[in-house]
Amino acid sequence: MKKTTYKISVLLDLKSSNTAALKSTASLAKIINAKIELFHVQKSTELVDMESQLSAKRAINDAYRVTENKLKGLAAELAQTYDIAIEYSFTSGNVKREIKQYLKDTNPDIVVLGKKKKKILKPLGDNFTSFMLQKHKGAILIADFKNSFEPNNELSLGLFNYEQLPTSISFLPELMAHIKKPLKSFKMRNNEKAAEGQQTDTLNTVDFVFDACENVPETLAKYVAINDVNLLCIGRTNKGEKSNTIQANLKDIINSINVPLLFTGSKELHLP
Image (cartoon, rainbow, N blue to C red; front, side, top):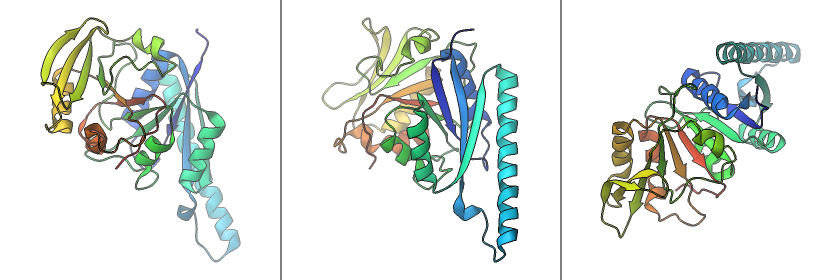
């Protein structure tokens, strides 16, 4: 077996279904030969509020046991199904603070979030996905609530907001070894005539260029679907590019695309 060189951290909401997100995570781990850690934060306000200190301690201990059993069960199921190393950990407290500390301590190559149908999943706070995209400069996989991909099948990769391959991600060689050619590249240009289906030899891609005045999320979702893309890489924008059309539509794009989304690169992202 190849030596594991990458780490994927899955930020779990144990109250929601994680099946598709965990399946995509395990598939990606098999493709790039990574290990997985499941991480959950129990909100301190969700634990107990009791007058009796003894009763409170018992309730906290019970909550910890339930959480550990859930994580242990998920880890065991994934390990058995995909024959892959799975670890898990959890804590309680302020969610954003605990996750920031966790990411600082573990420095994962990829962070995985889930999403629900028709809305960004907010498992750990109302603006948690936006928070992660703003603060975490590494790769982030937003797994679709329903659609996932398989480790033994070639991936149909789409690129959005890229002029070249996302070379900022360390696992690009392993990922590209499982990608169908040609790639599909989706772009928006303010001063360029819209075109579609143009072959680009330098990147071995087929380019689809959208008019900036179009309904970008809807148009992008349509072309992702008809081209059978099952993983879409989205380029991040630079700080201060709030007027950029991609920037303005980013939340709607996340909501509209029904495949896993991989945000790559180390540029800081600012959502409107």
